[in-house]
Each structure stands twice: as C-alpha cells, then as structure tokens.
Length: 128
View (tube, rainbow, N blue to C red):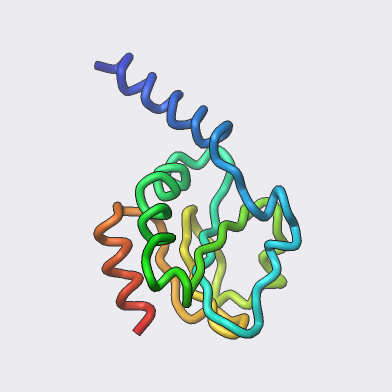
C-alpha cells in the first residue's frame, strides 16, 4: 500500500512538472493584469500536484462554460511574477489560489483546491 501511495505522489509530481504549462513562465506579458475587465487568475507553482489536478479536473469544463467568455481563466506562476505589483488584498499563502480580479483589483479569492463542485459553488458566490 505504501508503494502505491509513493508511486502516486511521484507520478503526480512528474505530471505537474512535465505536463503543466505555466502561462506566465512562458509569456511574461501574460502576467499583466487587465485593467478593464474581470478575470479569474489561478496562481500556481511548478511541482504543485493540486495545481495539476485543478487544470485537469476543473479548467476544461470552466473554459467551455458561458461564464468563461465574460470572466476568462488565466494561469500565473507565483515564482515568475512580482506579486507586490499586483493589487492583491493580501499575501498568497498556498497554491492554487484563484483570484477574481475586476478592473485590475482583487475582488475575492478561493484559497486552495477541494474539488470541482466546491470550486464551482465558490466561484458562483464570489461572482455575485
């Protein structure tokens, strides 16, 4: 049983490291915050298993939703952007943290990842 758990951790770390592209790391210009609209920014880090799981389990369905046209989803690597320049309400204490930004300022945030259903419920609450 320990072997299976250890293998799962190693595989998720490998997948997060090698399969997850991080927009801000590949394109620093994408780390700029829009000043004219709302967006959900997913702050993530390389080697974060939960960030990988979020991308796998939540992002595809969110991107297909009508809400994604009005409030797009964007990924920012916390290690590839100067967080002090962003207008966040407080420090980021864990990844992933999903921040609703409107007109370049933080409106609300979801800290951590608990699964698709809690995520969609919380997104509905913070977008009201």
